[in-house]
Amino acid sequence: MILELGADAEEYGRAALRAFDAAGGDELVVRADADPAVRDELVSPVLRGLGAFDLKPRADADELEAAAALCRSAGYWALPYPVAECLSVPADLDADGLIVVAEHAPAGAVAGLSKRWAAVTLAGVRSTAVAQPSAGPGLVAGLTLTEIDADGADDVALGLTLGCWTLLGMLDRALDLTKAHVRLREQFGQPLAKFQGVQFQLTDAEVERAGLDMLAKYALWSIATARPEAVDDALALRSAALEAADVVFRVCHQLHGAVGFCDETALSWLSRYSQPLRRLPWGLSGTRELLVERAGRTGLTGLYA
Image 1: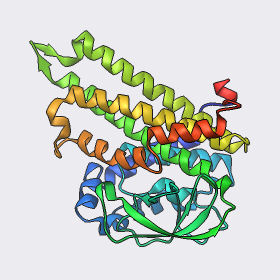
Image 2: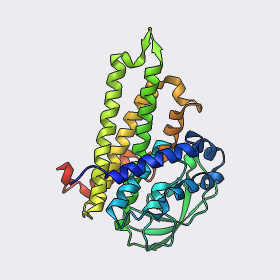
Image 3: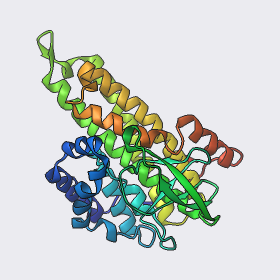
Image 4: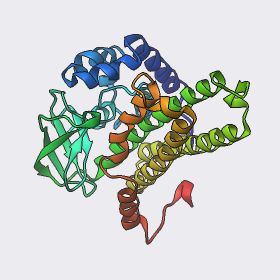
């Protein structure tokens, strides 16, 4: 197995970072939060310029890697747009995006978008999905589902995995912001970064982020090679992503102090908009339970063996 993205995918991700920055960067999520109806006009032109809607991650391994790199860049800027969902839609569904949902109280971060949504459960039940008009925190809306078929078992892994790549991008940014903060802020006459306790905390957070990076690439390879365990690998990735997010955001908030919860701080917006990814379709305990139900008897294989 090759656990690195190709050079073209890496460059595509860097181009996406620059494009999102040029389009407004941190201001995009602030404006979308104030008025969810502007999400499409804020972000869609940038994605079209990047050729994002032309990517076919289900059909080509190189485009799968490009899709992952794009999701990571979107997460880095907390882009207020369901990039992973739009990239996950299978060709046989007449929809603009696919949302992986829980069996009960299905929801997605799609408030304010006039698109055709489809939904799929872990059991593979696919439905059309209509977002309810009210928007909750993180631009989340409840979904009204109308069942289509039960043929979506193979659709779940990509949706879960690309969502984790988005969350990985958020952890990248949270750590970058925190490293810059502790170099700038001083206490007792020296930068916070000089204190050993701060260095230990950042090391713990970086270990979690780096481990998630490796597992995300493994899950991508599992999808690209059509492994029968791809959904199990995606669930294992999600479990690891949620654990890493807990550690990274805890450390970053601790080191920022109270300012990390102020709207003037980018970390606050990152943390807030990571919540839909961390809670939907299942939180950490729910994800672990589902993983045990699926792989508890045989265990995980490949990288986990």
